[in-house]
Length: 553
Image (cartoon, rainbow, N blue to C red; front, top):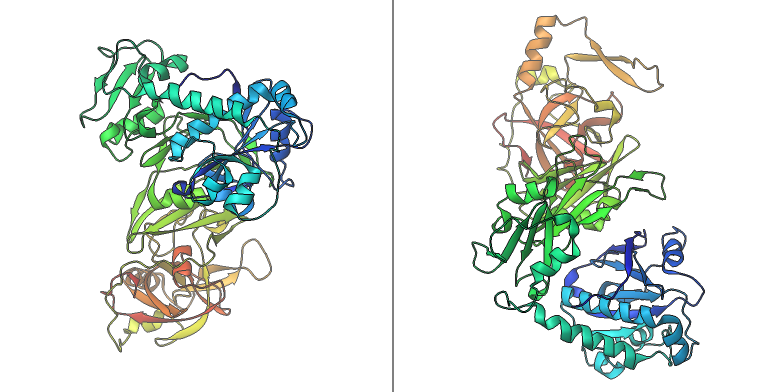
């Protein structure tokens, strides 16, 4: 497809939300109803108070600003946001005559048609201008804001782009781009035509000279092709964009991640978009967001943060963890950039980000995020999403605690009080220290099934900071050092059961816990969410047999 001349840049707006890409069925064009350029309109859409956005702004000087990733929903068409790709003509008005449209926005109309055909192919809706009756009969395709209101949402509303818009000219551009784009998918390289791989190379001078043999090389799966250049590869597959496009993968951290996972035959699959060079910016909250390079593949996205301390690592986000990450606005949102690949925990996978963590539970294929804020951690979207791993065997009924266990806790075998959480990315009290029982790093526990309580071998005194209401651990003078060490060693092999919110979980002692207030136990944020509880909700804690497996009952 011959690309019309235009300059494009990215300026992400905060006004958007995640959506299933399978729901994207329409492309719509809009007027601004005011003077402006693609840049000035994008600035307005990025204002936190505007509460509106489009995927693209375009003007007649051949400028395009990408304001919202088309995988996400822009805030343009109300209840249809999840189904539409939206393009706005900057500086345009419904009142224009047809000739004014052609004189003032002729270049932009051609560019908008090109963008809509590209996205129609990307998401699988028809690159055809549709009338209202066609849309009402459940046909997908291209229309305007009024068409979405009248035919998709079923009622009056916005009237843009107006009665005088040159639909014949717009539809002609759409038809031309569809027709001229069909030559890009030959079964094998046609000597008379540039292939999709060669077209991609022509658009990406940074790739350098070709170093692989022949025009293209078949991939081992027998369906795709690739070519290697000085600074990267270009891959084509009939399973990506219906075979109409090829995408370049740069050497370096992103290429290394692609290669390390098995190239196109590995867990990433083929690239499904170009690399995106993202500029740093500052969120409305004042938090800076680093720049970097991002590239989407069929089965995951690779992130290479420009300020990554090692300067060589790129990390993969995929599956249900990626869906949760998307719902929180990717690297632009509260979690920030990924700082690790997925790692194993007892019930599934977890992944670390700049400002939090995401846990995935295999038994329910669900993920929950914890975002660190001012020393606390809160579950987000949803606030009490349950964690439901495979159930552990029930604890033996009527367990009788040992003498050591009685000495380690202030009561016989059941005590009731509030619950809290600790050892999270935003918890300043755990940063840089080891847990007092298990010895593991307090800010990087080996699994989420740990707890802290008022064990009998440790006393409490005013906290070293002098903060009112804070306490710290001190030696008990009535217990010898040898006995304290013995009790601490014994404690590391014990298990307790915490019950609350209609569920129970078996935990391992890892640290000393809350002061003798209404709180009796501190747990991980994952366990707190899995119990469906908030801080200071009431729980019951009791000893169970040391052989009881960790996890939810």
